[in-house]
Image 1 (cartoon, rainbow, N blue to C red):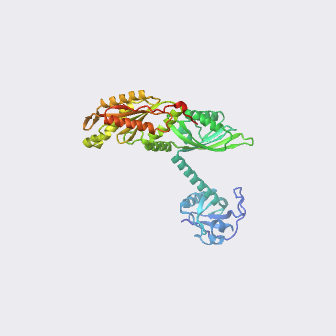
Image 2: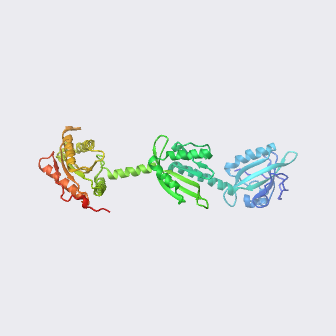
Image 3: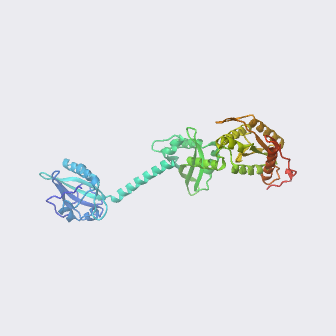
Length: 458
């Protein structure tokens, strides 16, 4: 480790006040150490005088620093600064200005700012006067700030986070590149837009909001009552990709309550939304066929019952079961049985309307909800499904396999509290079709309690 040499002429004393404007006003107040340094060559240089503040800042007393050339040590990473920059400047007779760390005896390395200037010229040497200023607190604060900024940038990159700072009164917007670039918005170098450009920027941002969310976004932003808010919305990027964002906005208002500034942190939650949608789909979808499962059927049936009771609209229920499905599995294997289930689902979806709802309840059992469909129309559709399935052999590794289905048809009565009664009637009709020879459609009798006008709803 580099050590500051001491001159053989060294003496313990405080130097005269430097005759230069570079002298630090902090000198003499405990935050700086005045000194003199004699430079006569790379191997002949050292302190000749040092102030009493040395012990607090450098960790050594003036006597120690002047007595021993090994008293003051430099941080290993800063040795080159001393040998190159500082001694190089003294060799040329130039002023010295450098920041480096000294190894403090009472603690960790300490940052100091060394400033010196040539004061006198001897026969073969130059004498420098200067000050060593304590800058440790500032340098550590700068280091922490850099680390904090790095962590923020990393977090911003990971979370796809951006922010903007809108000064409404002065028409100034500061914002991050990530926020502007992800939306394909106009962006000013340095992250600031002002005046008319700021107005154009705000308009461009509003135009990027998904049309279905724009009115709600404007209602939230225009509400003067809140000071802090968080809400989700969608935007369309320049590539026409839908992104889900969360805005957390802190608002500043003047004494009259008028909005003067918005600071917003914006998180891209698109992946989270996709994951949530995937999880919801998994919970509501049959993994083999891709159609809704029993849980989804029950939830949809509840909504359809509420709608039918409120508006006295009919809807029908179909129950479907593959004939002799156990024989298919036993004869050809479960892998062929799976192919049959998947292809059957596709045939049904091709024949149903967009508003109809198909679900696999389990095994080879399926059910369908037919909104705004009376019993006659439902029976016609059921017969069309039966015919399509019976006349469409299913391709399998074991060859084309013909299958048939049996169906039960029932109509929901608007004064029934749940779907259960209608589904039970459809199941009973299905079993009747099974027992009467299969590959049939059986229609359940209409319930006698169909009196929608007598139903009172809240």
